[in-house]
Image (cartoon, rainbow, N blue to C red; front, side, top):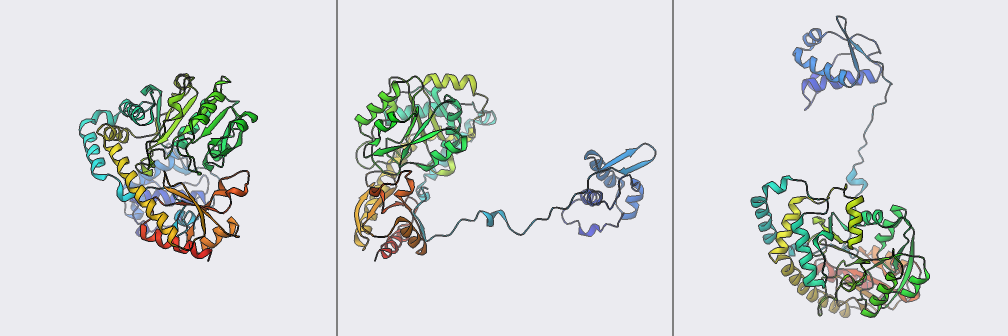
Length: 462
């Protein structure tokens, strides 16, 4: 057995260092299987350490199977397979997943962080810690805490025209998580319809869960019901309040046709993704399709990530009563994924009116900001033929007159330090009318940076 230099143990305790040295020697074959080790007193005397230190190291090695003890004979190395030592490289996880640096990233859908209502949020957090000590230590119900579900139901009634029971609401950490639960809940033979163009993450979720889906084209009013009927889809994912990425609102006639489609078969459902619906700048948001649903076929999804902050990770899903009963019977073993603390704090934030006041402030801020951005665009040499998405949300669709392909536009923008997406990237079926349209997500961009970015963008077409 080789000598060990305890001065090299660093921050390890004496027993941890001895244990590590002996373990490595056994694994590398430097202490052969069956070889007897020194007694505890011998080893302690050799290195000037306590017998207790050696005893603890030997005990750990015995627990893990590296040593065997024989009564009145001592300790012996066990037979273990030789293992090569694992060498770590200097390549860090941070380097592996490091994001590219951009002068301006027009693909981000974050929020403007300095507008977050920290004082009100801090207030409700302090109150939650003071008045809900016992509840914060308890496991949250699988649906989410009752107080938050009640406040969400009241909010949906006031702002989306929906009359829903709190018991039909599920709270989860992000819409992706809730969507995953939904794919397990719906009939196994369901075929899903995805809007084309539409939100690409939805089809990635379908692919990840191995469920069949079809791309169904949209027109200026939303998903085409005639194409939906021609497909074999039984579940349609739509964003009627503010379509992503086109930016239009689905009119009532198309909503009625969609509800009629769902009514025709017993297991047809509509997934209403109401992301971004609160940020409408002219008039009130249109009522949700769910508020028109008399046959219990609409599943409603929304999140607080866009209106508050992405880090909050609180989303919710409203299920028809039949589906909620099925969830309670078959899937209530899933624990709730949002901390009780954040749920109680958000419930108080809603109950005290802070959320709706914050949304109103953000509407005003984004409306004024978007008007300035449109003016910046008009003042440059950017060959704009049309600007869409001015009435809601935090993105603009800028149609340009150019001979450049969308790929060439993206690479030219990249060279200028701009990360952009084109509308054609969100299409499964390529259509000429969607070419040469740049999507500018501006939510978290500093105004000076954004102004310069638009000038750089215009230079691409000079």
